[in-house]
Length: 242
Image 1 (cartoon, rainbow, N blue to C red):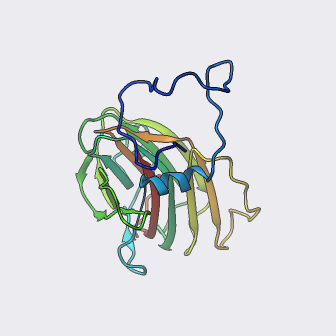
Image 2 (image 1 turned 90 degrees about the horizontal axis):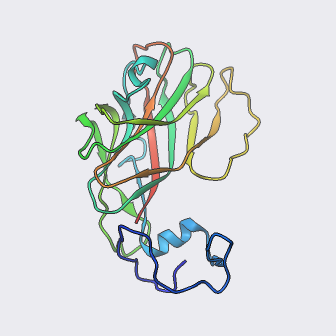
């Protein structure tokens, strides 16, 4: 964490201020001793936001049939979409999903993640727009993130697939919870079986994700068979913007 409590201004190049580190690696990295976790430091700085269903118990409906072909090489049906309309960088921290109504008839449950540099929003048909909340009590800054969840129809010609996971090798179960961790240390499995009909709490490791100004993030459900019933969700997510 920096010496100053005020959030720094954004610079487009390397920061060469501060002189030579008193203690550093062979690569010139300066060693520091953190006084809190990175997320606590980001929150104290005013750089951490969360977003979730506006009303607990009012669920968000996803796509009726998010098939593998819909989100194979490029995203077309997103469940969670973030567009960076600001001037800072957005680093997705986590996305948590609790399934209330299951996407019926699907034989497995998977998700893929994309980022792009489209220079404009990738949303062609919006769904539910969430209002992000700063986790510092005085709400010191505005965010450039536009968060859209549900049956979001998207299109992107520059998207890169950055993550792909089969969360359950069977159809989802009501009240399943899937927690996606982006760029965090490996999360240990709960040891619970992911087959059968028992409720599962699944932690999924994903790579670190950064959304530059004008870029998009897409998290898409991707199942090997269609469904006639769209799944509904309680959705929560967190991100750092600086």
